[in-house]
Image 1: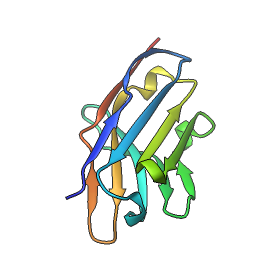
Image 2: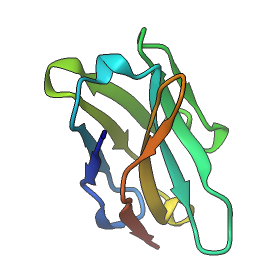
Image 3: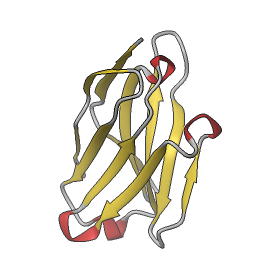
Image 4: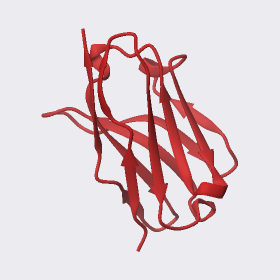
Length: 115
């Protein structure tokens, strides 16, 4: 059973930065892709950024140029560096790991950006 543990969320002022971490219990080489999603109450969970096993990345238009996803294979960890944060980035951020047969989710970490 794969476990994903997120950390790094918190309260930050608009324009500030946070770095989220997602530590996997197993080797992240086994995942086709890992990504970050976010969700606000009453809305669907949306993709923020994704990184494939080959290192290709993709971002939601709303975070392009501000967020960067990266991975450290030695530490089995994926990061989301968030800069120039805006109040509309406030959400619960979830880590996701995708295999051909199953999708794993972390428990989520709250990010709150004050104006």
